[in-house]
Length: 546
Image 1: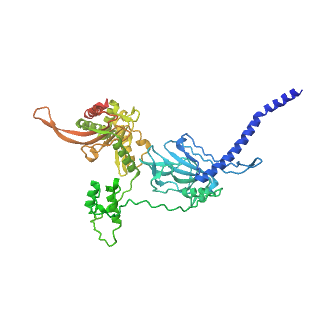
Image 2: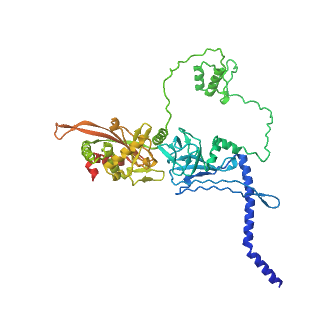
Image 3: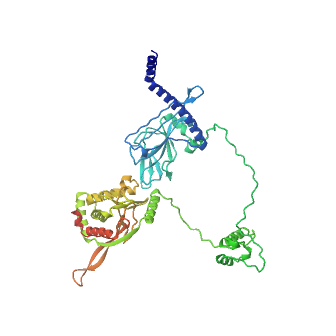
């Protein structure tokens, strides 16, 4: 009976062991959380670290928004007998964006700092190469209600001016960076939003630095250590390297390097007055320089000063760099420093091209279409040549050469704001009228500074034309990385060339084009083959219609 009783009793305990383990596990977690929280708070106060709930939308590119705010009142304090309930406020704010291009940065704050729940809106990354941006203008004012999809402000990126949309509903409580603010780093706070309209007035004098200072000013729980500076016996000052005059007995030889001796003679300095610091007291160049410096400092106030003629002041104006100017400068400098350029030039006869262009424009006028320019025909010929010689439609990487299957032609457009390169996608598959329409539309956007990232990203080759608009005969363009080639188009000019007969001549129009190649990707023979194909399309433009 005794054994049977023990077996039944132990079986009952085994049935409840899962519940007991869960209780013990929950108790342990609460104890450890409270202990680690106290240690973490003490460590953060010691080293000055303050968590901000930094949330990057780049890591959360999903197709819907989630906004969640919770306040919990469940922390525990550990005493000698067990646990007692305490009170902790926490706020979680997460912003999930639906577009990877608009990479907003939001930081959620709780009410521990004396402020209501709010979000800090950071400067978004609106292009792959963007590191900082400018605020062109705000379309919302402080206190305005904002809803998802509404435009908050216009941001001037490194390539264009892009609209920044709101991702969550609330109120614009504070604008940190106003209209015209420049060189704002990606992620830097530009505005504050709140959920409740009554909380707007509490952010009237808010600034990110003030909030940081307030959170950093928490009292230390432990008594701070006071460092007492103890006086130590002053060590003898190290001997100054500045040469001091030393008395050298007459007749003693002074050893000096040839350079030091020549410098001393040029400055009318006696070597005997300089103390050498070289091997065995050798006077070196540095000793003479130090002596001259010390003598200049020790000159009496009444010593005559030689007047040096000054260049008359020049009249000038400092023009601040725009974002597009800075990024253009950095990319072109990077291109010339890292890409081994070489250049191939060829002259192409454009008489047949001009004749066909005139016929096509008559058809375009009758149908109400856009006029076709010589540059449109050049873009089409370059695209077809890239399809024929795909090695030139490539890009260099450290591990491989990437050859593109799409022929996307960037077209250089000069504006008052800087140089833009909008892209004509799949130019080899489009007709001349479609290319002409897209070029004019993108050029208009570039001049209005309203290009979007999809209007200039993804190009595989670039065409730059300074001939038609400016009459430049020939030039060499800088490759637009990561592309491997760019075509520089010059102006057309009439030349006298031999005709069919021995003493017969005729006039013909020739256009000079120069291909800049990345030698890592395009060998000389490949570049020449591409130019041959391009020249064939230009001189026989009817072949582009096949």
